[in-house]
Length: 48
Image (cartoon, rainbow, N blue to C red; front, top):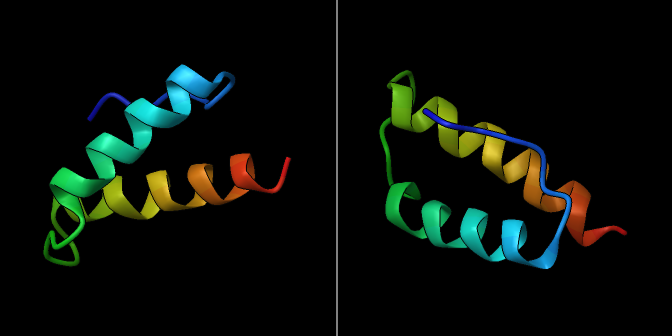
């Protein structure tokens, strides 16, 4: 898991691409945790 803040449009696109890959990850797995965190970061970025 390589999560970093979303600061630019390029970061945002990269986060969306990764979210597509792990969207259906099972809860409690590393990918599921990553999806939860990415979802929060993406949501926060979209509010800007």
